[in-house]
Length: 451
Image (tube, rainbow, N blue to C red):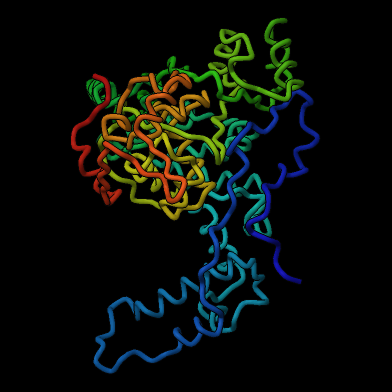
């Protein structure tokens, strides 16, 4: 039969976890389980790809030392197409089978592709060839190896089941960097910024820890683990927005026995309430549970949400990532073209980006305080007739989120409606810019991290 739709509604968590504790976390609101595996298909047919693969090179073309690049590119297209269509080994074209050699190699390519795209196990082809736990453990090894950003959109499994919190993950990355005596600049931009937010370890703190380790001389050479003793044991305090969701991990029996009556009541409330916004609970209790790794935060982003980009405080200018991360690659574009007057869906259409990946990117920007969600509906219409200027987009001023509907009067002075034609804007000049989103990274030359 035909393969299952790759663009259907999000699937529920895998049934193998249905026997977990009744107090386990619900899946958070928003993007935690909403990423779809693939963008719309644009690949050519099998016959077209096979024809391009088998076409002989031009007689004047000098063969490359590593083989024909055209053949390699077509082969990669065929592999991606087969993975998207969830083709089993037996259904692959013979030419592709001869290139991959074995069924195990085909399975390896499937898992490698899904991990690079940060896909959920229960919505991607990897579920056919890998167990869920093995898949996510392999993904975590890949992420640590590349010093990659924490996959927040997979937190329902990473945090709830594997119990690998973002704080623990970034402490592991910092330790590995120190153990290998790599410079702080080797940590990619967004990874360094998120690690700074959760651990308080920035450039200066990193250098200070390394100096303390090296001062021990022989002990440092024999035992690199002394760096771990100098890392924090709990996350530092950071701003938490009232609309963030609170989700539970899978407790052990010992952890559950140590809960106070107030904490037990809070956990019961999280399980029973349909809404799980941070503002609905005793914030001190939630903060204590978070520092003990018993809850984690979901930052929901929906298609009709609007954001404004604030100053990039805490941004760390180290290096761009050398690995593939579809969510991280969207962040620079979001910083450049985001507008408080555009919804997430409209922004995705403007960027020609996958909507669900853009939701994940916007969610991450909110976590770090680089984007502010306009929760109050009235604020969306503030200065609607005024074109968004650079000062509006990059301002820290929160007046936009507290605006009242009284701004409608000033808007009517700017806007004149012609019943016989389109709306005209009088007394206002509009300027449009076309910007390469990659330029943003080159403009951020200095480190903006505190200290």
